[in-house]
Image 1 (cartoon, helix red, strand yellow):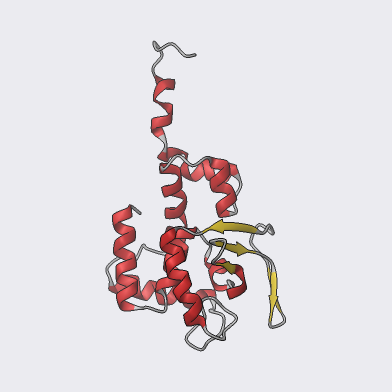
Image 2 (spheres, rainbow, N blue to C red):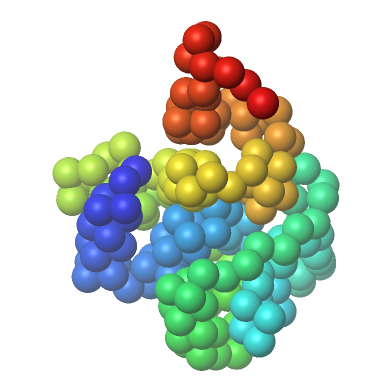
Length: 184
């Protein structure tokens, strides 16, 4: 997604489904997997340090761990910090940062279905949590963030990052394609 599309999707979700708005914003601005989003607790959010921690945890007797089995910390952009500061207040007494309408942890399939219905209504059925995650990685790559740093932020290996995002940096190879140019 381009930045203009990010603004568009956030505008749609904020207007049509305010409960999903902070979830979608976090997916886009943080590159989180859907499962990571539904398992975020208020304790994972550190507004003072401007970070979110993705980490193994047991909540209500139910254990969860990240896909890669590695914990990580993701910095919050100023926009996401503002959104999540409000969300932490709205979460109230719930342990979950993004509580379902029943004030419980979202079921990952249910939150995806809710997003899919909203995006279909808005004529953007291809905008999914997976697309939002890749938008984060793509925007980082376009800004020149290293594969290693993107991998750390997204909980991927540098090889996976190269596979998905290397094509977004063709400008870094211009000097390699100019055979007559002297290299230092």
